[in-house]
Image (cartoon, rainbow, N blue to C red; front, side):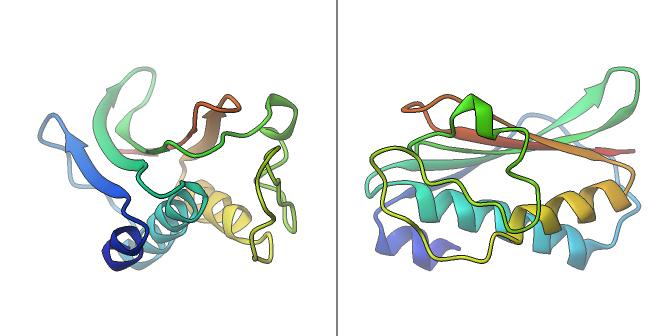
Length: 138
């Protein structure tokens, strides 16, 4: 993703604050999910923006690892947040040009994460960017 980010002059960074446990997972499938989320973030972030990949240990009801991909793109209206992981669903934020795609990427991310016993969701406000978060059990 770095060459695509560089071409758009988007700062792509990574933040992790602690040692993380080793997870049982299909690393190729998780990489596929990450590539999709980071690719979407870069695609929807305007030139000069930022995309940040963060990881942290989760010690709530279920111990695991939380991964988030945050961008400084246009954001997603609240009424669309519950449906963006549906197949063939695409949202074009107000003031944005439609972006090419099939609408399958986020559905695939959801399938990959849930098949690993995890969960995925998005948090966003129009004009303030979006954060896609998933948690995998440890």
